[in-house]
Image (cartoon, rainbow, N blue to C red):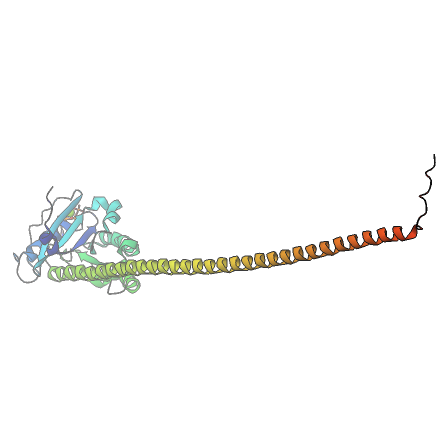
Length: 296
Ligand SMILES: Nc1nc2c(ncn2[C@@H]2O[C@H](COP(=O)(O)OP(=O)(O)OP(=O)(O)O)[C@@H](O)[C@H]2O)c(=O)[nH]1
Ligand SMILES: [Mg+2]
């Protein structure tokens, strides 16, 4: 599969999605825009093209030169309407083509436009409603068409910066040079929005990383402070315990000394008492008296 080089990719200013119901004029529009972009049709409108087209099957992609760059235009066939929204995410802007040759054909564009403006993947992208086939003989006057599709209400809700409405003819080229300018400017505008969003996201990630780093640092400082305080408390407790132990030892020593002293004095009292008893006995017996007869 062919892959574009970085230089080729950098030439593309953005990609515009081109949708609209079957036969609205998307393929003829692409053909005409390409010719204007390549300079094959100079100047403005009213250069009719070969009108023969085939209904598009699936997706067709063209690159239209514009202001020394290129605009990618991706046409999704009208038969693929149920899956249009799959392509919203990857584009820079959207063009919705309405066949305004009859009121009946144009009416379905109002429903499609309402869906586009509601799509969450398009909120920051510009939307263009093309009232195509303005050259067709039965086409309604533009003012009636705007009322019929309820365009003033859409413009009020979406804002004129986001929603544009343009009468065109893919056959004669009416409005197409201006449309090419709109494509270029919308791609650039979305590029700036996307770049700003990218910068914001990068800034957010950076500040989150910084906050996480600071929180980790604060955490480790707190832990260090805590362990220092715990060590101090343990040292203090050990000191108190040692003091209490030495006081207990002193008290035990004093008790032992006191016990030894009292033991000595008890012993002296016992000896004195014994001597006194002995002396008492000796004094109570008369001198020379015969010891009492022992009974038989
Ligand atoms: N008169 C007139 N005819 C147009 C215009 N644009 C397209 N047509 C004709 O309308 C028919 C369908 O045009 P396409 O460009 O094939 O339509 P499409 O939107 O690509 O249709 P799908 O690919 O089927 O979704 C062709 O015959 C075109 O020549 C226009 O501005 N004016
Ligand atoms: Mg087509």
